[in-house]
Amino acid sequence: MDFNERIAALVAKVRNQRDIIQTEEGAKNAFIMPFISTVLGYDVFDPHEVIPEFTADVGLKKGEKIDYAIVHQGEVQILIECKRPQDALTLENASQLYRYFAVTNARIAVLTNGAEYRFFTDLDAPNRMDEKPFLVLDFDDLDETLLPELRKLTKESFDLDSIINAAEELKYIGQIKRTLAALFKEPEPEWVKLLTTRVYEGSFTQRVREHFTPLVAKASAQFLNDQVNSRLQSALGSSFPATAEPEPAVAEEGAVEEETTEKRESGVETTLEEIGGYQIVKAIACGEVKPHRIVQRDAKSYCAIIMDDNNRKPIARLHFNGRTKRYLGLFDADKVETRHPLDSLEDIYLHSEAIRETVRRYAQPLD
Image (cartoon, rainbow, N blue to C red; front, top):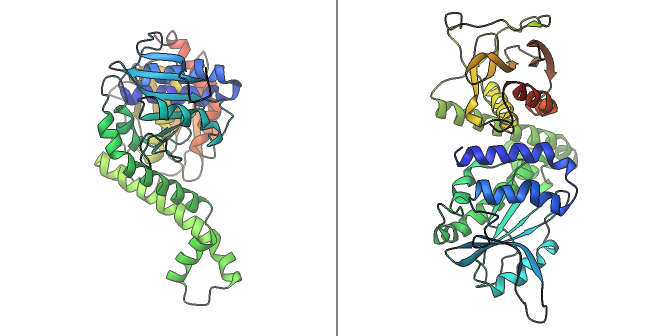
């Protein structure tokens, strides 16, 4: 797997298993050690590369330990402090990182609960860890534009100078993006006033504020969707249909009909929703097999997701061509399809175990 595929596999694992991990040790074993090993590329069982329970005396405090220290070219470069998946990553939880940062050569400190990783350095004062992270990876809402920066911390591509030089820009851009995301989701009064006074000529009264607050939230959401559509269209070099085909009647449950190359329909355009649905199913399935084995085949009536590019190994079908209704088709051991209605793409995660079970029927886990 390449770097992005390894990240996708770990993201899927965290999303599927986080609710059953209740301890810090559980988070280390299930999420954080795999992050260090499969994503960053360091051998967690080699003390020349990864030192668990790293100890360094800090002033009058003796024998304090930090969860992991990552060594590169003989020097401690990265410190990692771990918390439970349910724990918020607050400054109070980073107290040991602050102390150790000042007495080691490490320039990067990481606070994580396995589902979120916050990366710190010393932009504000030399040898003193900043209060705010310069990089935040949230596996619930992964920003893939940050992955090239994360790659700089891997064993293979370690480039501390480059990431430190980019840290200030990353820090403030990240904070601005998170602020905008919060404002778009729940507009603050000042944000509502700023936008309303640009389009409304009357007095900005309390009544006007109450009227425009949901409009600002709705317009913000539509703006973000439009931007996503525009970028995908540009990247794919194709135009998505402005309107969907008429919604087909829901077929009765029945056995999978074998497709042939000659039978595939022409004139197919893959929609944005189908791309998103495929990526979610693939993220779930890659917890069982390598991501390249999960393949998408689109047709006019549905989008098929199969294994090994083999029609005899159907995993799911995306019935997204209706005007109002969306369905996820899943298969039992006899390859009989059952359609499940979806209110949103995120509802696909509700069927994670069924998807994984189907994949397991075709191949051994992680083969």
